[in-house]
Image (cartoon, rainbow, N blue to C red; front, side, top):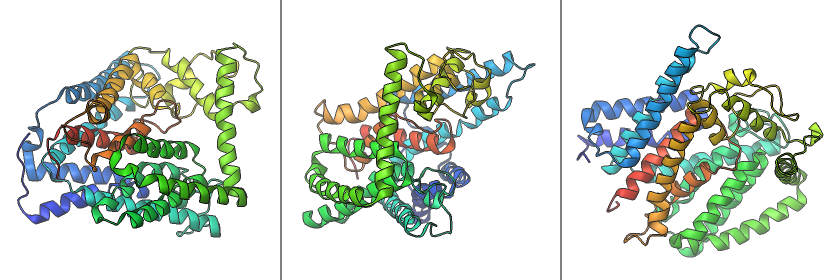
Length: 435
């Protein structure tokens, strides 16, 4: 790996400010995320020029490179085949622009590998931003408007600073673990650390429930469970916090109708998804009343007919919204209208870049987990997982959890987050020492 050093302290400050602004940019919106990525890439290229590309390629780096090349190949083939027909020509442009995440990946690989990223700044930024979003949700719950005067779309689905986008719970899930893992940097006593963790767990868990985003709650709890299961360094602090949080949560659940209705609704929809899947796929019955079919289940079913239109290379990045209305309806309970994506990463990858694209994606995910979780916790590595690496590992696992509803994999927010996680995980996992 290229040996990079800052020319002066200003470069250090600018670089780490840009990286630490990522949590804030997610609150502001896609324009801010794209601007932040653009500035981070341009700054790195100006300061270090070609040195950022002198990182020795690992096998997973080559697979990721092939993933991007194949996604472009899929777009080119589909554009050529349907050039004279009713085809969305912008798919090719979107595939070319998608390469900015490949550039971001390799720049982060190089910067992290040369210890140029101060993760403490990023963790503190995550703490400030997740607390702000959580407190804004509490404010909106109390006064029916948030701190900026934004009203919720639904009494049991609070969006806080995100306005008409119901993504507050997903945001808290994404960045909350980073905020929790800033605490060891301050070397609190065990008693104080447990109390602070209890308070943070309570704030995050309650805010996610009030947001009405049920899947982020499951993923948040999954992340905590995995940390308890694998990480010795934090295991001694979290159980007490979970006991306190669980007790307070059930007190709130019993005494607050909004929290109770939101949580109960999540359980009903989850069991409904399972029941419909069993009835349709095991008993082979299609006579299910439409009102009993959860909306997400119907949306996910639209993927199959779309995927069958081009099984191996897909229709190109973000082609689902264009191809889905053209599909053949294959089921009695399948909706005829289409959303912009099938609300699951793996189903969307199948429809957009086909079976080959899905295999490449799964290989990237498996290699990332192998190099981090498996090597650090199962193969008895000589070094235990560094505290900085821990939240990245378990957030990544919860983010790519197969049985979940999700946003679009190829959007700015998701692609930035996932390739940032992979870059940091792979680089820190390969480092022999940590700062």
